[in-house]
Image 1 (cartoon, one colour):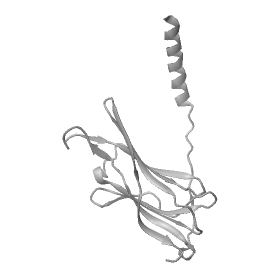
Image 2: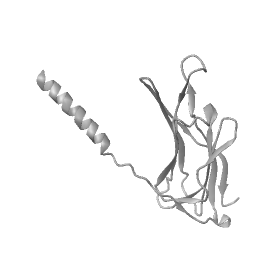
Image 3: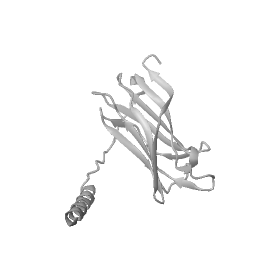
Image 4: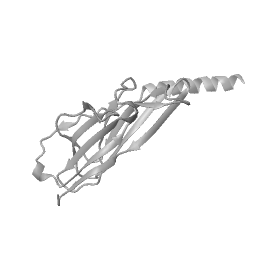
Length: 172
């Protein structure tokens, strides 16, 4: 029995120490000049985000959520250019611009934009509008939001996928 407790204690200690050794990669996006005439592909996407969600049986209790907008370039060999990342509240008011100039996202790279749990400015109907373009034919990126929150001993997490509002291709 004593051996069992030593094993459990050792496992807990090793689990805790391995969490601290996790390396988080912080990418740097490179600003680029984009010639509108050279664009052959691109999209404008709507991505639903929930900075709050109602809990229990009433709207009186809302759980605050953090949200991560993830943009993943799925093309095997070509970059895409992220031209705009805008965050809107539930009333359609612009809250924040996440980039000021177009940025390059290399092939198979990803980037993210974060809304903290304390930031309730978006409300229950917040959204991102994301625009991207490419100077060659590319695979469409995966663009989605991941929401996470905790309350007492409960946790909630879910994703929402981007919906294409506008498609650009070389014929446009």
